[in-house]
Image (cartoon, rainbow, N blue to C red; front, top):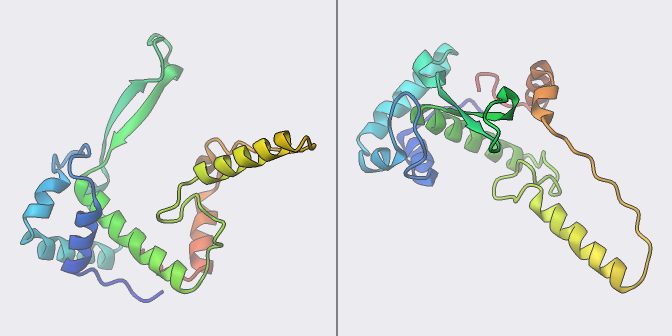
Length: 179
């Protein structure tokens, strides 16, 4: 992957793709305002580039606000809450830019299989396989055939993968080490 240089156009594209009124983090900034204040894009691009060059992000970028949202009506049990963290809009913009660059690199080098929909841009994640399973089930039932199937639940898969391995995979795919 070529060295990442963040331009005002990268910032503008990331901001354009972002939803206007998603909950902001500590910065209190909505993407709506970044879309209107295009003069900020050059400043943000410069600051993002400085953060990448220094290989360090300011704490403002990575500090979020966490809210505990109840999963159901039982609010007395702490395990029945889902933590939701609102990250700063500035951080979301930076990660959007980096994600687009990584995706471009992976696509141009044909790294990901076309069947890999879980993290492919524009993919529907698990919805497509579920629809396929549904259609297969109906065809099997209509034609009175037998079918054997198995599903594996990868609940919390991300948390079970060591981050050292994730770093190694990015290295194998030649993603810019600064990113």
